[in-house]
Length: 136
Image (tube, rainbow, N blue to C red):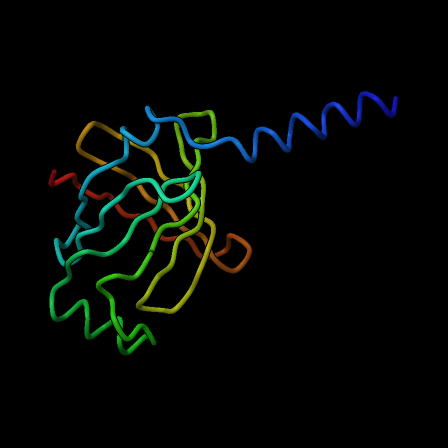
């Protein structure tokens, strides 16, 4: 019995530490804009996962982020640790600079040019979903 537990624990640890495959990175890699077009995020590899960093934002978005406690919106990592979940989604963490909240996130590629991003805070009681559009 102990051997079975050790083997399954080892397999789980290996699965968690394996890097995100190049094909998974390629699927999400690129520049994406939020629904309002006020924020542009670059998705790409960071360590053994995929992350999203704000590379451009409107003055209004920057001001809103400042009011929420994020001094510099451009350069802020708003998606971290995205890894394939095995069901066509990626799971990781999201940061909402407007509310200064970090929450578990799920990202799903809807089409080659559209992403659905969902973040849920407060034990999953408050969720927000957005569709982002690829711009390159």
